[in-house]
Image (cartoon, rainbow, N blue to C red):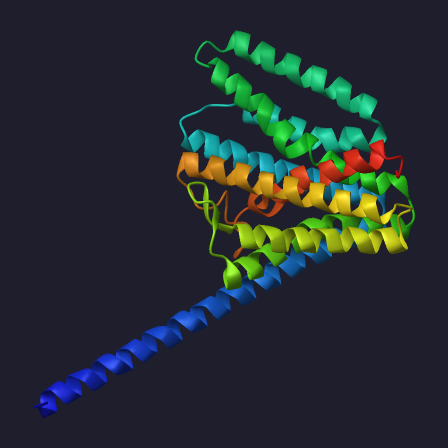
Length: 294
């Protein structure tokens, strides 16, 4: 027999459960809104810079590269390493700037950068070879890979060059978006549970579709490329974008942090926002260059 007090207790428990569910739903909705707003702001800022011309594109990419390199070095300090941040961040900013003029200048900058790092190592007894390796890897990872944006934007100095570059970058973002929603809805088979538990093979396939979709559109509108080439470029871009995401996730897991920074609420740091772009877009640039498209 159920007493009045038992009934009242069950009613309170039910009400509390409903309130918790409603609170959780509202929290997730708010997080999604924040993520969308900041993501849209990032995309609009990038689009404006691309449309205005090569110099504004270079300035923005230098900023992105410098922020990514700063976050990378911050994580390395948390891991007990001591890379030379001044040399590293300067090189990360310098690579896109050098690429604006010529890749010959990129090669010269790399030599100067390597020599400067070597001199620092010789003159600093407390530094070790791991610090040297990280000082060199950081700018290559965050700055040199970002030169793909400069390369694509230089193909056509008109506004349409900016549109084409933005769409190429969008293939990476659409890959992430499709992977997120497909994985959230249908994801059952974990892709890399120890590195990125939320990634699934279902999301991976959805992401590939999103990336290919953009490149097929580009082949039908702005770029003189075959459907086969578009599909190959979309697959390579999406695949390397996922690799870039997993690489940064592996770095963060090794350090013990969830995000590389908190610059963009809902996304994390600039490196969190750019990890897929760094590897995905340069893969597309290689294919387009080797295929004679650009």
